[in-house]
Length: 480
Image 1 (cartoon, rainbow, N blue to C red):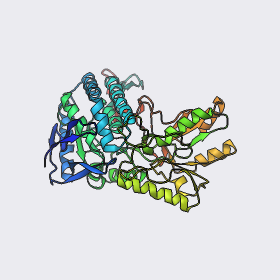
Image 2: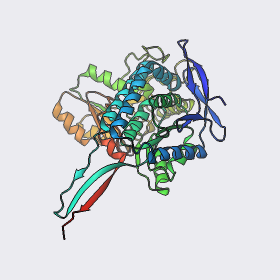
Image 3: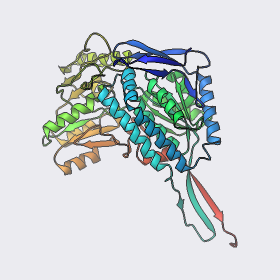
Image 4: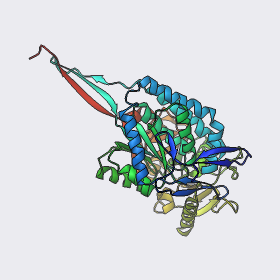
């Protein structure tokens, strides 16, 4: 199969898209020769055929990463690791327009959000470049006979499994801190959205990355993902995706070499608007919270919102707010939840059907009159569907907000700072946004409570997830 294809973009421009597996700084076919289709969710047309990684390809990628970890990367100074990440950030910035267009082409994300995603990636790589030479240990004074200190060391080969809803962003959250702390990585992309990661692989090579420190395999979770999670030479797994798959990864990690895991899983974010809120501002934030990125965000504030004038349509139009769902499977799943809500007795206030006749578009949808036992209230729909619920007291809304197995993020809208802080203390979520929503920043830790995951992404907190502590105790000469 060809390892490169010329892809035509909607603006008439074309670019060269890598199609192979990126292992040891080279693009190659999969061992079994298999490929899979990558589909444009706006047109439902096939964009390209990409190499499909099997278990043997995972072995090759892990072996390359292990050689790099034991070889050139181990002797690379923290300062030079940081310089490499800055070069990658500079190249991402240089190729911002192309990366954003490819993200929209493959994922369906509206162009204005795709541009923001690429800018966020630049910030993430620059931020962790700065951390590379600032990992410090401690001296612990135990007695006069020994000198004791701790140091943080990398795990080794990290398997990084990224989802389809924000491919570049969520890959940067994992790759940048993992490399900054001295690990090497094997990235497993979603079979739905592999294209931007393969472009990033080219940028790593252009930046002068040593062979093997950054590897990209495209494939399916039940084959490539399972092989990576259970691999005996993978020392750490980080996964973003569904809670069901997260459980399977934990099981595979435990059954293999007890590798530590970081899991950023599902969410069902309550977005609470009190009667003293700035209503106009709250409307803007809760609308953004659920309908941003076609509702395909783990922290979507899906339990209260109001549709304003949301522009749905061609994601390459810079004025479009709401593009298509990323896949036919997700499109069908969301419509199934809408039918379930109607069957259970909830009332559709807006939307509720597909938009247009082509592409995986769904109208922004609002339900009212839903009870806590309905699926649309309990489950993570992962689409442009929200439920408006009324409440009378603070205690009532806290109880309702916490009545879910998820705990990723939540929102509170009020002018009363005491209420905002009190409610934030009571909400069982890893992030609470006050008078805003979905304003993720690379300096702030992000992760969930309950079934929304284990560990944290972003901020300084994630650095601990990619390192382990070593204690060194030196007996001093001349002591008894």
